[in-house]
Length: 134
Image (cartoon, rainbow, N blue to C red; front, side, top):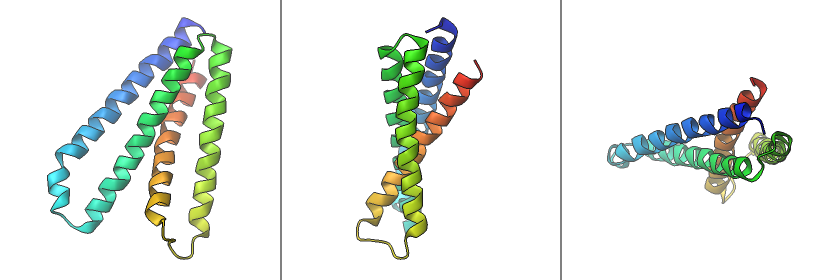
């Protein structure tokens, strides 16, 4: 892998990780305010946590791919495989939401999973932009 692409992705992952860590810290600091607030704030907090967990999961996975495949083509191939899998799961999840007429018994799990996929998609889109701009 050329230093330029490898370094760019690595630096971008560090920035994304720092941002995710900051957002989690902010979320934890506002925890006491939310717990005493309306139910809608508790729900939003749960969704925000799922989204940030998705971002963290994607950052960790892409970092592992980056470290495992120093060759540019091997990295891009494995990254694309991971991205395709996550994006397909995201599309399936989105379709499930469109088709819901009534929330099922496990609605909270479906919602949390969807927000986790949204967080992963955000990171994948960001890394794709970095790759394209190189």
